Length: 350
Image (cartoon, rainbow, N blue to C red; front, side, top):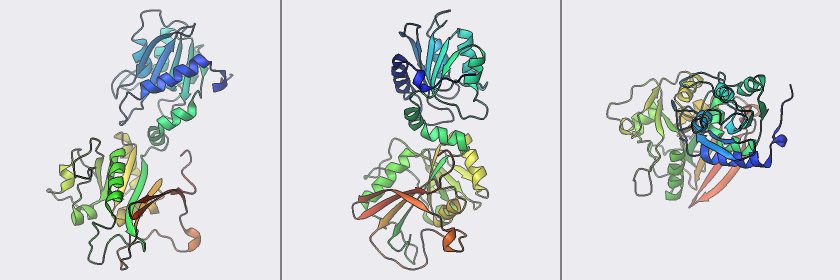
């Protein structure tokens, strides 16, 4: 069967897709479900209805748009939607079926649904006689859904591993002190990035030794509006008076014996991006397992020497086994440098 391409979409449909992306942005940026927008066009190209997804358990974008139309109004119309209509019955019914039952004659979508259970909507629609075009504004929609698509394709959040160190790779002095390795500008940047992540992770060793709050704060110490979910990996018990247990978001405690399984559990909770702060044991575990999609390294112009390195043993025996990264950005932050790097050979599909 012929599969239509983005080149066969009309200018009116492309404009409607841009509007659908605007509508999608009204939905919640976190959670299990993606942000999706839908515009329904008449056969003449006029807008009949608009809709978007407002979160888990609510109507999907297509059904939301259809709800604004009376009986028969959608017959022969075109549904323009940012994500391939789902083919799955969960807390709501399949959007592909709803579109067929409404009499939609054409569907234009941007990105294919990567879900194990929800994919296949386009095929179902074509089998029902609907004209289907995929890949319209695909790049823009992929960028918009970036974290959700990553989690859906890989069954885990995208992982950023962060550390701050001196030029000689030390994360603390010999006595364990480490609080002021980097300056104010670097710390402000780190808190901004915390706020952008769905979750922030440390190991139980760091909780016991440093009692971090794991909150995102401004320069005056006030909580930012967006707060990541605190995640603690490890088998050691978390002290009942630990600051992380007073976090604005409920803490998630994971054994840490199998990082891949733990990450799958986080993805099932709707966590799409994970900011791993440490300490060295946890950061090294993610690196050794090949689960770091991005590195953020804050470098201070100082030397400490001693044994307290930012990263521990990665199981690398010889130089040919070295993990290789591409520098994607280097930024001056006050007296410090922020180096952003990603694996030379990323996970397929990233």
